[in-house]
Length: 447
Image 1 (cartoon, rainbow, N blue to C red):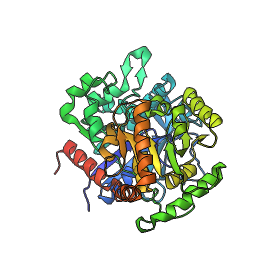
Image 2 (image 1 turned 45 degrees about the vertical axis):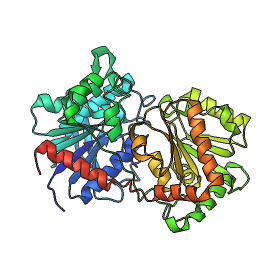
Image 3 (image 1 turned 120 degrees about the vertical axis):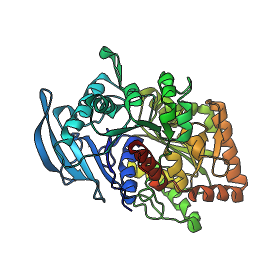
Image 4 (image 1 turned 90 degrees about the vertical axis):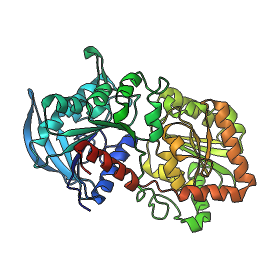
């Protein structure tokens, strides 16, 4: 299938080269699906100091490309296990070992850094033999490109994807909001789930930008993210103890007992294991998990990093109830996979969730989600594959989890049906990529 479309995806993160969160997963997976649709797709990110020069075959394309009074070097590699070109922009401002200066929020150091990156993207294109028809922008980090393209009279279209409206890239001394610029100046705008596209038009979820979003309502779309179903696959996952299929789901329990042993708990396949893998921040609702949850007949394993107050609160639960709670304050891809494979239930208690990937991954591994009905969670979790709650408070989460535990212990046939319904869901990028292709063609007025 050939579309002859040329797409450049610009972003701050890319799995596996440089990742902090779900943004990196999306930018690492979408191009693979687009290539399968015949789209000529390339990626451009900063050349961070954390990117392993020895691990990836990186070659210099051109040095000393002028950006005002400064200069950058342009390098190229390929996305691992593909032939997709990845451009890397090298400059001292990207040399640190972290992608972001502080939290994922928009620090002033980061707003300057990514505004410079946006300038560099357009300058570096001239050093390549690639002339994209569409630049696909992602979150505030690349939003300034939309303004530069619009004011520069360049014959390039822009699609702007909002992954998380809460982080906006505000440059305080200039009164500049990069997220707002991306929304106003891009040809089309989309969010990462249909429900979130509707929610952000309201004051509750609009984060102060609902009025400008309403202005672009006719150009605003919602496309549900997918997951990399090759990487997240219980039949081939190299990180888990025992592989299993839909027809051999009973083998999943071997992963539970292996993880229990790893965490220092007795091996007990009959006790429900409840997993959570997330950033420990207010958005993710981790503070809804209170001391009362220790009364439930289950074990909890939490993995992630975030704000100290949330980390400390979870760690205090572990200290007080070591037989009930285990908390791992780190990012650990291997352990994350083991938690998905081991968990019977998976928590996603987010206050808001543009899309959410963990509920999809959990279902892929036969873990039944307990999620709040918001954003992409509402689009993916229903009564046929999980449990949900509406109000963001501890009592509602407790009630939903208690209901799930009752089914787990007393109605195994219903539980197995929930698992199988989740396992049979198709969360691959194929469907999402086709929706993005429609938007690219809409921008270019192509059928």
